[in-house]
Image 1 (tube, rainbow, N blue to C red):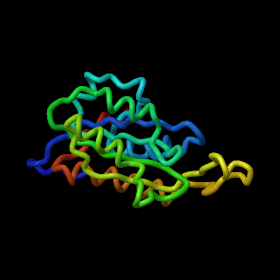
Image 2 (cartoon, rainbow, N blue to C red):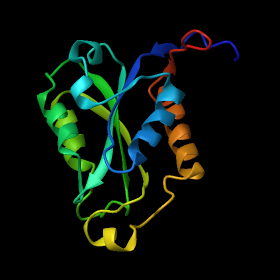
Image 3 (spheres, rainbow, N blue to C red):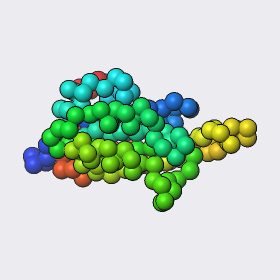
Length: 174
């Protein structure tokens, strides 16, 4: 890896993820975590003190009945209002966000009320076997696929530059 620009600063990141059906969102979270050298944790495993030291926090889940998972929304609602922090929101779903009811909007608003600046959102398709789709084996089987995961990696890798920082690099093999 080349030398860093002396003006860049390190960013400490964490990714909070709920993935309950087929592991779709966990796959995306893991790729993003690798790109940011960030741990991926479930909402109930978040150490709020540790989260408050992060410069960038990702919040993601699958979509259930056109909404992100309640465990993720409950965590966001319970976070103390702190100093200005940055976040991103991501989701996997069988279908794209409906313009008349974006599934990321409620979480973005909750985070903004907690003094997070939501830098961007990301979503990709995921295998969906909920409700009407279950009898036919679901929709979007095989998703997220390699191209989806590469898009997630590129999205996450670009976030530090967009916020004027560089990701923290741990020890080799760590």
